[in-house]
Image (tube, rainbow, N blue to C red; front, side, top):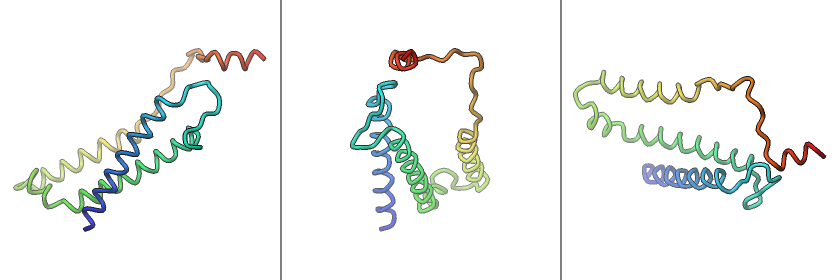
Length: 122
């Protein structure tokens, strides 16, 4: 029963993440002022998107733990070392991307939209 509940949770979070991701990318127009969708602004949607991602990540970890015997048998039936390497590579990819330093270009001019230019000139 726990597996079914967890699978439904992962599916619901995946759908929510896809929906909010596309909505934030295509529904909000940069420089058009305060915009809302269902009464929530883009920063509020971004926060919900982040929390849904964390919930989905926890669900995926639970899913992997609940199905570890299948994973061990399917991937690494004879070798515990191969299973450990598989887990370490996955962890390295996740942590590497999560902790990768952000770089900003120095000396690049700020690109302003027409609305921002008009607001600055007033």
